[in-house]
Length: 77
Image (tube, rainbow, N blue to C red; front, side, top):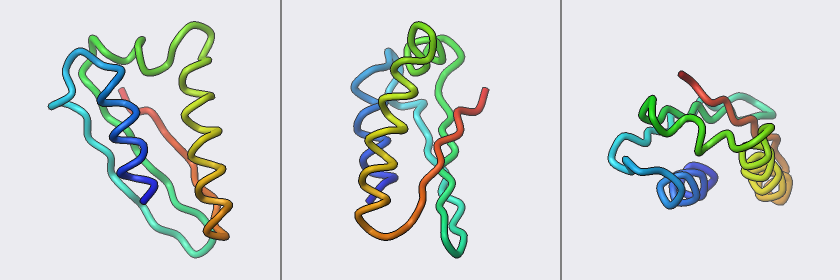
């Protein structure tokens, strides 16, 4: 669920949507989503002063809390 949400949001932001990859690492109480995008798109995903990344993390956190888990988004370069 969270993976699809992050993929959808990020693919609509970037210039190279085919290069978007989300890897899910499941834990007992938390889920880590590792986001990888094209080098040219990292700035678009992070945004000015990290605003877009923070917004994505907020949405992700809200959906994960609904399921009783914790979700963490890591943007890999």
